[in-house]
Image (cartoon, rainbow, N blue to C red):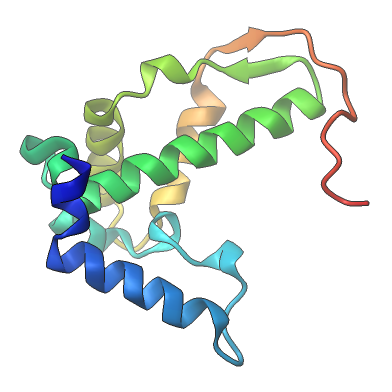
Length: 137
């Protein structure tokens, strides 16, 4: 399945544009790039729920959401002792959540849908030693 996606013309085009756009002079910082910060109106047209992860845009979105929520969890754990259970975020739920949000809010960004999901989700208490992640040394 992933091999088929990797041969897709859209996947190759997106991958190539990411490689070219990331290192150019005057390029935007990467924190402001990616599928999660794209325009909802354009993204909604490319999401195809029936195709699951065989659709390269669906796959990119699902992968991005997994990373985004993982980062949110680390942040929440570093600042407290709770996190969101990611096991509920299968590809069907992610694609439907973002597609519904984007159709209702074409001028917004998919990251806003995931921020809302994280905010509203039940948080699970965990044991975490704050300060274990050393990103800024």
